[in-house]
View 1 (tube, rainbow, N blue to C red):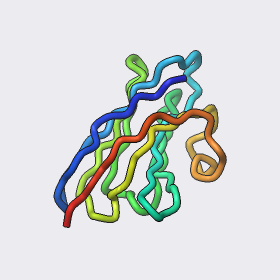
View 2 (cartoon, rainbow, N blue to C red):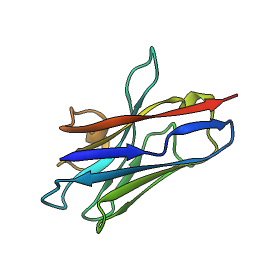
View 3 (cartoon, rainbow, N blue to C red):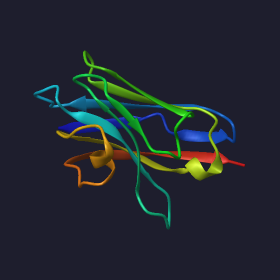
Length: 124
């Protein structure tokens, strides 16, 4: 499985960005694809996930109401629409995938597949 993330950049507080993750090598549709993020000096944090098979979605409390995840099963692409960004959202965002459920376990268990990160910087 390979994950290609893109869409990061520099944006001002209150702005928006959309991240994309293209997954290749998925042989089944029972994968969760999602996003983690990590800023310098901070712990890695799970952000959101989607179960491609049924569209189940989960968000971290810190992004609920501001971020929206969506997926396209045909192109195996997952999008993370990030609105009302704040400097606290500044981090490298990593696309991840595994054959688990999109629930609390996504944020806790080691995940098998990680893409390269894309940097999101929110200026104040």
